[in-house]
Length: 539
Ligand code: MLC
Image 1 (cartoon, rainbow, N blue to C red):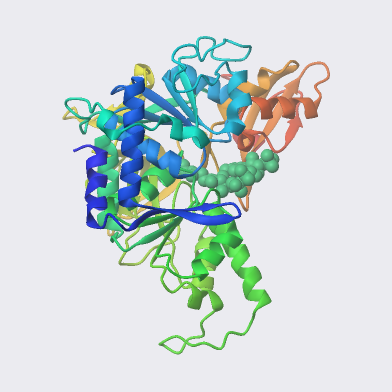
Image 2: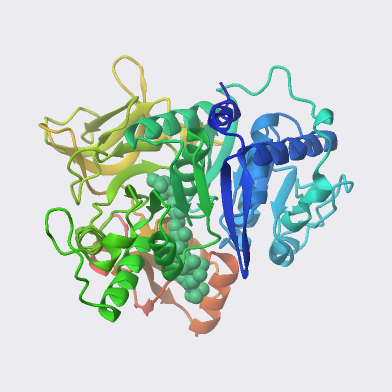
C-alpha cells in the first residue's frame, strides 16, 4: 500500500467532512473537505504529470503551512515523486546544499523567498518554462537542477484536468521513496534521510493505535509541515484517521489559548518551547482573572483553563526533552498530563508514554507497536537490564539510508549476530527493567536542541571559520529556559574581527536559530593531548 491509499481510507469515512481548516491573516478561515482536498490534489497531480514529473523525481518544498503545501504533498504521493521539504528559516548555505544534493526538478515556494533563491542560482521559469532555472550566480548551486519554480499563490496555473493524470504503472508502492528529509549532520553538511511510503505508514498506523485516534478528532496544528513532527505525526495521522486539522501558519500562544478555549479541539501537538510559551500565557490569563468558583465532580476547584479546554483529550510533546517543571505547570493550569514521546527524522516515531496509564515526566515511554529497541555499550553488547548505553532501533519505521551517502548510511547502522540491521540513534538511554519505559540521558555526539530543532556545532563552526580572521571556533549549547538550549561560540581570531559583521555574515549563510547568541574570544581553545577541543571546559 502506498501512503495515498492509506489516506484514502480516512477520506472515505466522510468525504464531506472538513479535512483542513486553514487560518488566514485577517480573513475568515478556509475549509476544505476531504473530497475537495482529494480533487485539488488530483488536479495538481495531473498538472505535474502533464509537465513531465515522474516517479522518483524530487520536488523541493520551501513554503509555510497552507492548503497548497498539503495538496501538493498528496499530488506527489499519487505520482510517486519525492517531496524534499526545507525549513523556511534556512539561508544561502543550507538551501544551496540541499538543492545541490537532492537535485530537485521542481521547487515549490512563496514569493518572499524568490530573491534568496535567485542568490543561489534558481529562477522562476513558470509551468511552461521547461529548462533553465539555473543561472549559476555567486554563492549558488552552479548547475541548479531546478527546471521550474512554482509560487504557491499561483499554483492554479499548474492544475489540469484529472483525466490527464498519467498514474505510473505500477503505482508507487510501499518501498518507493515518499520524502527526503535533510537532517543536520555531525559532519557539518546535512544529509538527506530517505523515507519510504512504508516507513511513514509504520509510524502513522502505530500512532493511530497508541493514541486512540478517532475520525471525530480535531487537531490544532501550528507546527511547521517541513518536519516529521508536523507533517507525519500531525497531518499524516489526521488524514489517515479521517480527522480534521485546524492548521495555523505559525504558533502564537494567545491565539492557541483562545482556540483551545473556544472548544472543539481534541488534540494539540507541540515541541517543549510551545508548552513553555503556553504556560506563560495561561499564567498571565489566570492572574488577570483570578478566583474561579467552579468545582469539578470531585469537588476540586477548577481553573478557567480547566473549564475552557473541556473537549481537549490529548496534548503531546516531542522533538526535544520536556522539562518536568513545564509538565507540572501545564498539568496544574489545565489538568492535562502532557504525553511525551520520542522520535527522530530517520526513524519516525519510536517510543511513547501511554495514552491510558501514568505519563511520567522525564521518561519517553515504551516502544510503539512494531518497534523494537535495544540498549548497547560501546562494544555493541546489550547492557544488563536497567543499564545505560546507546539506544538502537529496528522496525518498518526506520529509514533505508541517506541520499547518495553510502558511508554515512553504513555509519548510521550496526548489525547484530544474526546480521539484522539496527539504527544507531546516537541517544544514550536507560530502560526500566520492570516497566520497559525509557529515560534519555544525553547524546553520544554533540548536538544542541533548540526549540525542537537539531543544531550541530560543527556546521556553525565551519561557517564561523569561513569568515576572514576567524582562525578557530568551538560551539557549545547553553541551557535556555525557553529554547531548551542555544548555541554560543568561542573564537580564536587573528587581526581584528568585527563581531557585528561576523553575525551578519552568519545570518546570511544559516538559519537564524543557528547563529551563536554569544561570541567569546580566547587566546587558544582548550585541547587534550590529541588536539581534541575540550568542550566540557568551555561549557
Ligand atoms: C525561531 N527562533 C529560534 C527558533 N525558532 N531560536 C532558537 N531555536 C528555535 N527553534 C528565533 C528566530 O531565529 C528569530 O530570531 C526569533 O526566534 C523569531 O523567529 P520566529 O520564526 O518568529 O519564531 P517562532 O515563530 O516563535 O518559532 C518558534 C517555534 C519554532 C518554537 C514555534 O522554532 C518551531 O516551530 N519549532 C518547532 C520545530 C519542529 O517542528 N521540530 C520538529 C522536528 S522533527 P531573530 O534573532 O531572527 O529575531 C523531529 C522528530 C521528532 O525532531 O521526534 O519530532
